[in-house]
Image (cartoon, rainbow, N blue to C red; front, top):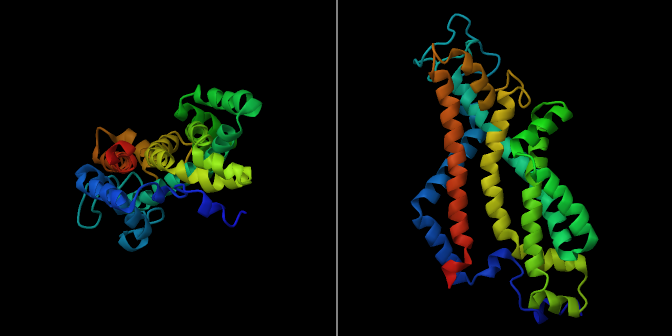
Length: 301
């Protein structure tokens, strides 16, 4: 019976199959026609390439190569973006800072996604006491705090450090994924193809994995894209406050912390990391808007 189940149930079992092939191409063309979305994708692609090839692109070691005779200098032929208070090359530190920012986005959002989506789907699918009085009350309590404040408290409790800080940010982001996945599961659990799967003997785990999760992926992917930009801001904020990356690590947030003491004498020290954070977060937001247009069902009527 299970062998014939997929043939008996005509349902979009995968997120990509939710649209006919022609409509999917229409969505891709619409994305390609959105210049801002393409710009966002290009910014993120550039971030990934810089993070991967940072050792090849960097002109100096970002931590140990310190020129004490050339402190707080402006851009020149040796140091393309100048040097910081310890004579370290800002250009090289910016390149390696892209690695930390990308890791921050992937770790925090990956943790929030892997924790929030299963909990949210199970909660919305089964409902009952566990959903109403346990999961949602915990979510309400966590969302009562601003995400950055919650991340600060959790990072301080975990003891600081980059990975502890990203775990704290991921915990702070998880309630949004729980609530979104729960809402999707609640709307899908009573659809015809799910009821048909249940009627032919499909188990709850199979239904959630085979039918609920794939058809809930579109809004979850959009949420993850926007959350990556927020994770980079959170990492920079925690590093700025000394709860994220180590002070000597080339984090854009820690670079801003160093630069605040030299705004009057060397304002470019804060310019480079500030522009980088702005550009990357803007890129994720533009990319998220483009993906949302692709998955918006109103565009395919």
